[in-house]
Image (tube, rainbow, N blue to C red):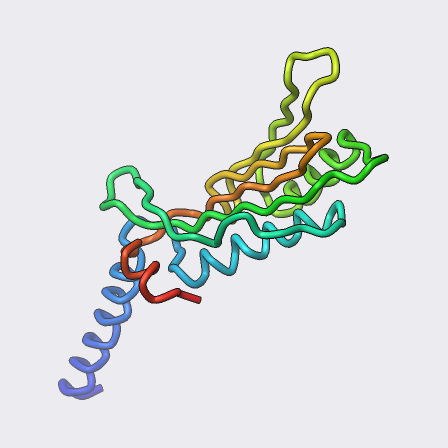
Length: 163
């Protein structure tokens, strides 16, 4: 290899490393479009696991997030909801959602209110999300999710309508 080709190889390798580092200084491996696709996909898989007609309450919307040892970043949040139809089994729906999330490597924790007729749900974290929650309340079901934090400007994402 000639001296000229050696320098080109070094420059190409250096550029590749710098590009990888600058694209994700927080080490999350996620950019804005990937995080948005991931959160939309997780919410869709969650709602499909129990069926019904869901409507978007909010999002995906860009919001600020903090990363340990890194500059503040951005994440996507999304909320969908539906009226719980008569005759649903909230406990069975919580189980279906929990199974769907476990397949996505989301760690789950069920919860219930302390009343005689408890309100049920499950929350999770990990995999493609920072946090996600499913409330199986008799009047209204809802899914609230936040993507992983990534390097980005919330102002730019809101202004650009990022895809």
